[in-house]
Length: 168
Image 1 (cartoon, rainbow, N blue to C red):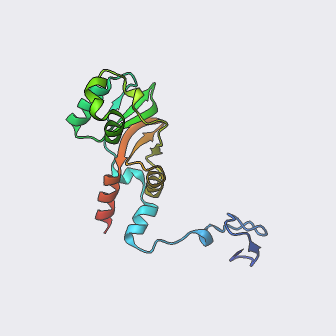
Image 2: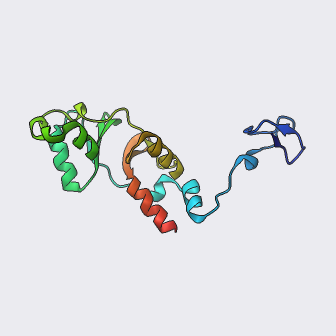
Image 3: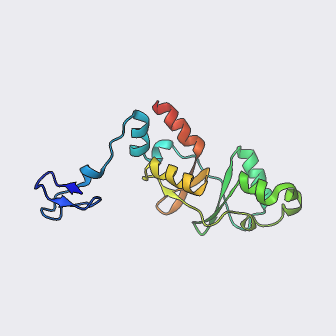
């Protein structure tokens, strides 16, 4: 139970407002960050990571061309976009697992046959903690970042590690 600091009423844990006086109970349920790093994770926003410009390709792009462009950019992924909508992601892991030694024979096939879909995305204004949560649960190393519904960036686990290292 959460006791309202204003009126003393016992409320169910997790309630946003006091059942009796309607005062906000949000301060009771928020755990306070214990360190600078924890504060950076909880309060930091995706925009603070300065997402890189993503490699964006159409679903019909040959997978061999996508691989060449990834190598040229020293990037780990390509975001697959159709009509400004993110429909998939193709990562270096997809290349290893789905193409493997058959890559030369499959180079002319569309990347849509090998991409991961659906794709988890985040907005620039989302918290870094959300990114960590999605990456952990889904086993992702890259997340496309949207702004106004369009892909504008990409973040990776490495970006978050650099950010946290700087926070130390």
